[in-house]
Image (cartoon, rainbow, N blue to C red; front, side, top):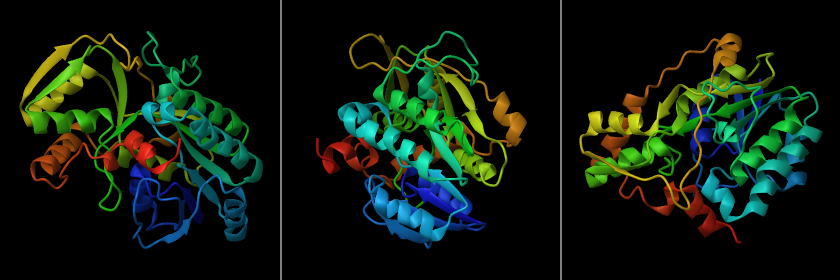
Length: 315
């Protein structure tokens, strides 16, 4: 089976290609927005997803069986920096893909951010969305173009953990950055703390995508491993790394207003996949990388999507 991973050089893409390469004929299409090189031993095609002629020629010329569409401007801050670009990349390209893919299977990562803030716990896929950001809006709109296609849409919880040795880690994700801050500073400030987040290891997402390849299931699936309060997450980090937890009010401009938890009963029923990468292991691995200076400066712009966007893309 021939699989095209569009956006295969990023944080999730790196873990996914490792997961697929031993079983499938994997091709990667990417503009290297977040990377400076790509050295994995798979077929690589350099290009922007907005270059529709180039991408269509590749899709039709190679006659892929499945397309995994990871390419996106990811995260609330990065999308808010340039909303028009976010719409063009996250939404309009998916509309184009839906029109040209034919019967090819599409696997698309959306986000649990589409739920926004919701007092109901254990949200299911049919519950009303409440997007609070440009990122969430573009992901929700992109979903709609795929609903009547041969497509699986995974609404992902917030990713965490180290992906693979080639792709950069991200330190603009809640588990990763909270752990790094605790190790670096010996303390961690929690704003509010009662807000809920769904969390899942990047490698478990890669495994879920592999389960979807060749699978007949279609539609929207929540995908997470944990639903956890931020103050509970902070306590896990303290238990593993030591340090002090400080608290502050959540109010104020720029504070993340998301607060939701989700059910994955539909995913478990249709895919039957268990998770292999626990939170505690990821925290320990990140802490080790910071302590050993295997990551010299986790605050560097290379590890942050917003800072990368500001540097590499024009306004």
